[in-house]
Image (cartoon, rainbow, N blue to C red; front, top):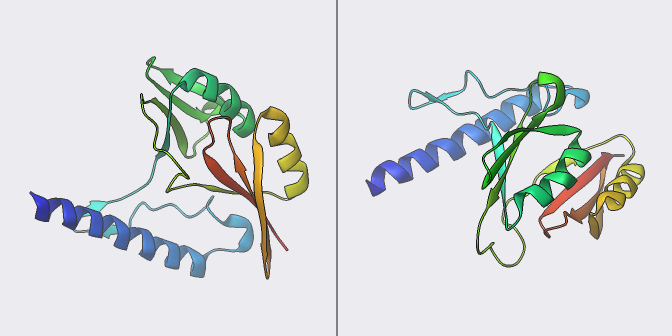
Length: 162
């Protein structure tokens, strides 16, 4: 059983790396994350595609108020302890899950997502108005990003090329 779990994890990581490399080579800067889908990249006979990112929270409904406004999404499913947010109007895209937990992981979240925008400063201002907190700002050649935290303290980044 341990071998099967390890193999599945290794397979998932390898598929993610292969997809990132293929997409980096095949895409234009404007299509990052939008036109590159993981479908068709097989690993051990399985196709691996990330369809949803889930955030642990003590109050999924409160956090949904922030994320639906921040992302322009809507609550697609509400099962009380678990909410699924999906792009408005039935558009395709990555879904966001909000899952009630009694004891959220302390400290900085180990996985976060990065949003790419055309006007980082305006987006940071908008998100702060919705309840996000600015944590830090970083710049490397070709990219500037701001680390923010949602109302539960979950960190995410908003970046702008340039």
